[in-house]
Amino acid sequence: MKTSIATVSISGTLDAKLQAIADAGYDGAEIFENDLLSTHLSAREIGAMMRDLGLACTMFQPFRDLEGLPAEQRARAFDRLERKFDVMEELGTDLLLACSSCSPIAEGNRERIVADLADAGERAARRGLRIGYEALAWGRHINDHRDAWSIVRDVDHPAIGLVLDSFHSLSRRIPSSSIGDIRPEKLFIVQVADAPVLNMDLLQWSRHFRSMPGQGDFPLDDWAEAIRRIGYDGYWSLEIFNDRFRAGSAHGVALDGYRSLRLMQGGIARAASGASALPAKARPLGVEFIEFAASHEEAEALGGMLRPLGFRPTARHRTKDVTRWQQGGINIVVNCEPEGLAHSFDVVHGASVCAIGLAVEDVPAALARAEFLRVPRFEQAVAPGEWPIPSVRGVGGSLLYFVDAATREAMWAHEFPHALEPLPEAPLLTSIDHIAQTMQYEEFLSWLLFYVALFDLEKTPQLEIADPMGLVQSQAVESADRSVRFTLNGSLAAQSLTSRFVQNYFGAGVQHVAFATGDAFAASESAASKGLERLAIPRNYHDDLEARWGLEGNLADRMAADDLLYDRDGEAEYFQFYSRAFARRVFFEVVERRGYEGYGAANAPIRLAAQARHKPDLNGL
Image 1 (spheres, rainbow, N blue to C red):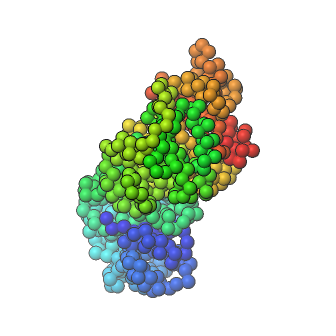
Image 2: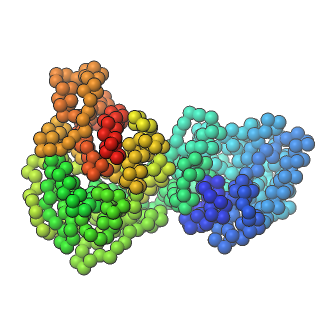
């Protein structure tokens, strides 16, 4: 795949954008006219810079309102076209994007449109240049790629070809099967964007809500496969308009874009044809461990919360100041080392989750996938006799370890040989149900892409949750067997719990960990009896539950007594309770699922309001 990105997709000055694009690994870039107009560098200097950076100038864009104009306006448009040809020669590109006309004075006469494009093709050919014609979804007369292709086909000029843009086609729900009629030599470039499915004006949708492949809801796998099937072998170029990306780091957004193209190359939701030659998505088999960084004092306080939940410290590391806590199939590692990443993490963030270990089938393949996506490895010196566990950088500078599923028992035995307390005989908690990570709103789509590109995880629908201080955007990614689930959360509201966590935590990170149980009532009562401070839920909530669901007997009373929240989906039921926050940062959740697959989103406003009542505790936790 030959990769490209339009400079309009990222923030900054044009020279900074081009540096970021080159650093991310693209083969080329489209120069957006406004970027060129606003730079102090000439087109010739920009062209030279691109060549020095190893970037092809894949296209100059956009040229608007070329076809179907009255005589006077037509003459002016074609004079302007010749001027743009001059710019293209200085940039070193041979391709110009011409959008279908939106001018209110443009005529829709097909013969006129064909004749105008044929004339433009003659002018371009005399200078060794080409024009790609694109159907804008809101074009006045041409707004469907099938119509644009019909015109390009009838113009039948070597210098006139088609530009396909996924947004313009998929926003109008044009069948991707129609791409099969296009001759590959007439498809000059392919532009790519994803987007959430929204019911709104097409122009506003396009200008503000485009996203990278894998971040939205468009059926890009079908669309890309249709293009591959006709034999297209040119550039796949991102053209993204998104307010979040304009506010983000040029290097970060450029790298996300590169990853998204690689994701699409191999298939977003399903493997693409020819994908067998590419590193496959890593298939996670479960959360092997969660690692907390903490000082000794913080570790003691953390233990004071873990014990009431039923955990026991079962072993110490062979050489390090690290303790393994266990219950059921859950492993929590508390790292009190005075140096290394965990110590640095604790200094910056305070006691918190610094790493997550995921069990995978094939560690080398997982690392190959990470390298393919340019996900940075984390490497540190391994002490003699220490078990090597490779890792990559995750949310907020934390680590994601790849644990070999076939040797994990041997790993634990080797690394933690010093026994402490025995495992609980009758554990109340069985596994890690999900991990909730909170981040800046502008980073949300980036981390969503990270998970779905690197791992074989599916997205759930995006939700907006009402915090007493503003809205929170939330979306989950989960493995097919639900053994691995992450929920991602971000908010624009400065005083929301989510935003306060990011502010006081000094960055993104794990805000809560949810444990699975087979009996939420027993787990809640046991934890409270042993000193766990639960999040108090108002009785009004439980009275409403009783009325809304027609709960039998004293179920609402029992839930109220145990501070349990409840949701239902058909016959499926969900029970959950929360702890107060540890060190005013991380809190714990315990969930019981009775066939329920969601995350209790209906209860999130109740939980957030309950936590907001404790606002003096910095985070409001």
